Image (tube, rainbow, N blue to C red):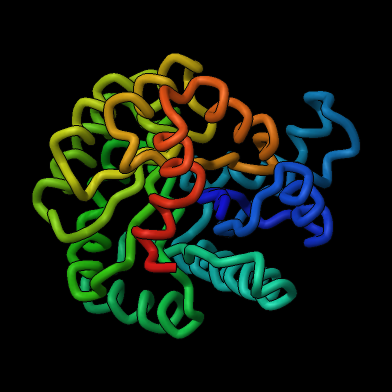
Length: 267
């Protein structure tokens, strides 16, 4: 079974399924999204920038905490509606606000993630080292929710400082499975080396910095590599073909394309 571990909700859902079918993907894990770049009229910068403007505001911290929580709740409704439209094709991960107390974080996870039968939490995209530190209550809360992984964006704007903070959290909470989204970006060598020595760390291969980084990850830690496309920002078919092209073995390919994430989520 081929499973894309990371796509954002695309509208209409039929477009998402069309992309999955084109790549022969059986199931996809959906994440909420604020921008819908698939709605851009063209691939010109001016059209994409219009759709991305809301994301820039989120990363820049211009929304109040109350506004951001309201956005998240609306996005969760959009996510669960997409899953309900094709439950045989989709699972989901749910967002959790930063800046909440530990009890409030746990309550949010229970209400918005567990009760919606979502499989994990994220995507978190920390815009600064300080925001990466704010993941501490997320990790602490997840210690009480066995089996729920956390998906953290580790490419830009996350730098080496933020990545090291995340690594420290992985060591402080070894029972929490952590997916390094985009496998560390330009710091892919550090991410792979860390994953080799920490069994709770998984490497998402979407939006990788180089094809060499994907080949290296599949060589060093094939049992914890996860196929992802980051659609609509990446093309599922091309992302699958990249893994098949650079993989050192058929066994590594099978693990990355679906076996690893199926095992992690107990699908």
